[in-house]
Length: 314
Picture (cartoon, rainbow, N blue to C red):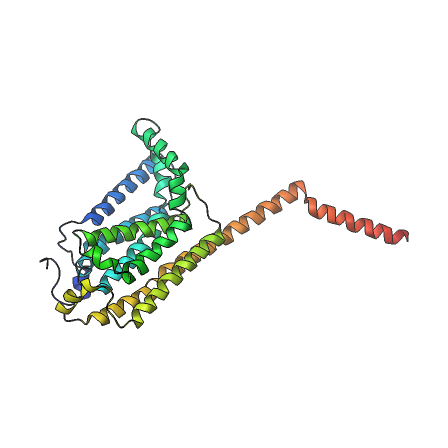
């Protein structure tokens, strides 16, 4: 066992302590993303152009959470306990992506990038990507929902987790995969950036409901299970003095409870945007009717006047 993997049961202090992971890929990515985002936001602010502070805060919180979940003691215990590994998976798929997506990194870079030199090249590549069929397919529910199925049912029930975790860098590869799957699912649901595919508010709500049902049922399955699904965690879990089956049931409880919180918040946000869009549309229609009249209402009133005139003549 690696010397940086803990040998005592987890506590809040050890979970939040810095870890000695030899390959901190995702923490480095988090720092780079935060730096790029801040550079773009500062460029706009210096030029006197507006950029929402709340989007900046959201994105930076996502970067901090990404670095913490893969760079503190949580990462070390994720190699030993399936419950901590599940906590990492849920956070990488359901907590970090909404924070990053609400930051609208794509729109920020499009506004902040210079329109000459390397900036012009970046803009052309971005426009080509937005128009590509690959981007349209990757962001469609036909791709994002099966990815969610694979990340839970395929990984644990088809014994794929043991195979991947046994590979060098397998744990980190799964973390990258969890983050990618979460971001791909969240972009069409929450993003306000220009996208090659646009879902209506009803479609977004349906996607969130489907995702909630998928991982909630999976959590119940783990809680009620009587067999070990991931053998890779048995030896390190027992070395900590913890029953592997109890730890697996705890992982199921996390999938059923902790995983629901971000789903509910996403649904509330979608419903809020849906209400605002309908309110704005209705107000615009009323203003147009005040200026130009309502053709359908005018025709109906004319029809009623004709009927009234006909009755008077009789």
